[in-house]
Length: 258
Image (cartoon, rainbow, N blue to C red):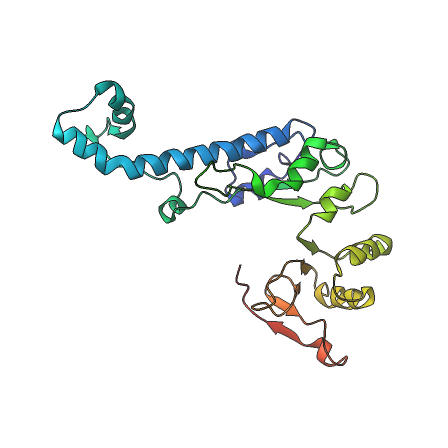
């Protein structure tokens, strides 16, 4: 979702984004469209799952020659391939279907600061609160498709920045170098977690010492397998509980499990 997608098209086209998956108007009814996408993906997955599981019984019924045509016509249309003139098992829309899983959905919101979408759009704020529950599966399946939301913004709390509901429900942050110390302090207070704000500043300085380096803060890191909730970029853990200043300089390289 980006009002500047057109001007960045050459760069973004390298990511293989389907043009029909782009929303260029941030104040449009984007939340309803995203909910519909999740519901459609759920329905497509459940339909394939049913057809795939019923395929063997369908072939057995057809070969038996005794069946109710009124009940079988829909299945015939679903399984019949006019190119091969054969009944065929339905092909999965995504490879993850074969593992019994629906697709992973995410929405990237870029250059939308100052729009109603991130400040006063109640439907969008509700979506941010329940994004994990989009595309809910009916009983007895349980669970939901869900949708991860990524928001790129140049402002945090100032006018046109992120609504409090979005800030409070964020699970991680990618922080690049900034000259706005007031906003940096606000971010530190919101995302420092179990460490003091001044320690957060130290980690921030270490993480952003390169031209394109950033501080990654994971508020829900798995302590049993991850060394820290703070990283320089994605692959270098920053250890905040070092015993002395020399040890605090040590960066622990570790391949992220994600």
